[in-house]
Image (cartoon, rainbow, N blue to C red; front, side, top):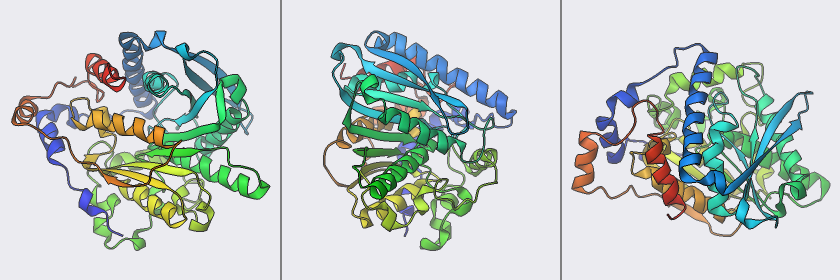
Length: 389
């Protein structure tokens, strides 16, 4: 295998990076983990709450929190989001797992994201907030995801979800949790002879293999594999990947297929619900998603893959980047597709950059240098665009 053709930084990204050197040079990984976690989560929460207020989503989407017991005698919280104007009729359900390297994220950091998904898609979104490192380690995040999913599918009436239209999805670390949940559900259905309770899955820039178990031998050239080719990529270079992995601990075999769901045998993937995968080309975990997509296809699973050439992990967080909006459109489309039918691999064309746009990027894109999410005003505008406003 060789997916390196998508791994060189794109013209769009290079222009954005040249216009925002201070933003991209900012790195706080030297801080103590708990300080870094608290600071990052606080910043993301502030932005999320501001966006919900400025877009009016707080008046359009109702939220409710539920405490869910976990297998180790502890508990997690899940939060449901439901469009108010749709009343109490059963809606499609989206079980969501956030990203953040198993380290960042909280219920409130996802407030805006889940609200606009519920509103834009007329779905009940259920955010399963698993526990994070360094408070836990090992397989705890995956076990929390499994326990949270089981609670959701056994409480669909309470949540107002049509049990025949449940989609599971996640971003980055959340993509790993999603793949684990779906594989477990397919296995349960096979062993019990009962229907699978998941209609489809959406994996956004998913982390599907522990970095210490990456199958370099399957690739044409180790130097062209994404962990090596993209080792110094923006957002999650190899140092940050190591930080995330180290905090999970080393007591679990990295080839464990709960930890590394892409390592499961292809035969085990037969019967998997149709799957949409969104991949960034200049991303150390690019090849995990594309390899998994090939394994799913070989197992007879309907797949749709969107590739964003030359863009780094989580590029959509940079509002000044033209592909920010395109990612959001593709994510919405993928979630709609997850309950319908359409197959294929789609290599996403970069936005056409007019001379005026290139000049604007060259002199400085309208991005707040204090946060990779951009200004609340810019993000609010993006939220309006997503809803067609």
